[in-house]
Image (cartoon, rainbow, N blue to C red; front, side, top):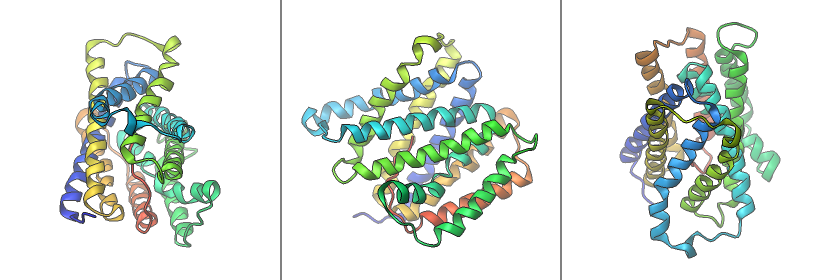
Length: 288
């Protein structure tokens, strides 16, 4: 197994930059397109980008006996996208990104309930500190940010954690590329259903933003896959949190967004605890 932390870190930082640009494209598109269209384009473009790879692999290598497991993973993943993209449209970009990146706080508890993996003791105090950090960001009961959007953003992290645990359930027989492809296909099919009542033809600028979201998300996914192939997940994982910093810089440059000192403190607490929780774990890392 490869162990090149320097190269792995580079690819993780490239992935973080790509996901930050994805978030910016989603935020821009969300101003002119409903959430249903944004989620569909994100899924469909990734599927189109993966089809050439699927054609090279051949049908035999894509067959699966765990279609039900793929469906669970896809359902949770699509729900996470809907909530994440809603949060992006209603919160500062960096805050929305951070709430979704809180996934490691929830994975140990969901895995404990769902598949019986009891977490180590360190997870409990770390999760408490992380939730305090999330409280500093969401600020329930204040007018600092839309509290509903903040809670929906937090739900995106929980749903993404469910998606990661569902990946763990099928990863004993399903290779990562197959999981990614099945997700792209199923997510496209699921997200196409609401288009029956939500479709509006995007204007050319919005269409470019939607295309950018799908393409940069695919680039980020490929870079992250490469990063985890080059070095242990616990070593390169913390570099992905650069997406929060990149997002803050992009949002400040494009929309003049600035987060307050309480959100900065909350961000530090959440990132620190997520790194602490994830350091010893070997969870699958397949980004949305």
